[in-house]
Length: 139
Image 1: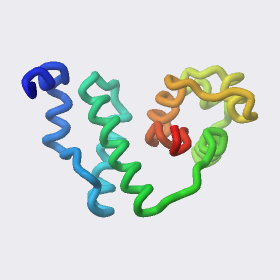
Image 2: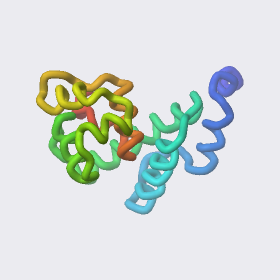
Image 3: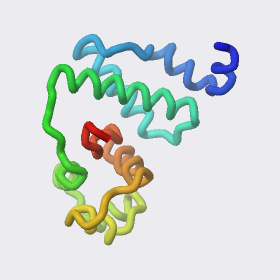
Image 4: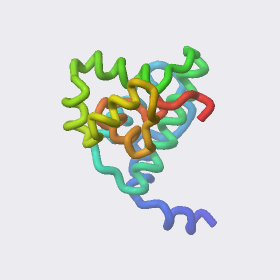
């Protein structure tokens, strides 16, 4: 059975597991190592194995952060607004850099539209944050 699973997942997944095993985050040093790996992966075009690893690692980091520092949920509007503010980018500048229409960014910020999965991924990669940053904990 394990042989079938291994064949379905590219070797890149297992290489990443060797570099940083997928275990519960133990402490802040382990958290920093996981966040560095996430940042490294978000800066790349990922294959299926790398994306699977990133998804699990992101879940582990999120679980650790919820256990150690529970925070109230921020809406995708609040998250996007803060990322724009902290980066010093305007809506048109962000639109050009991530390939999302400026009108879409404006509609998200005024609450008349939600981000799509692809838009969340593009923004997360650009801002080097976990895609989960744009989602309430219940989703």
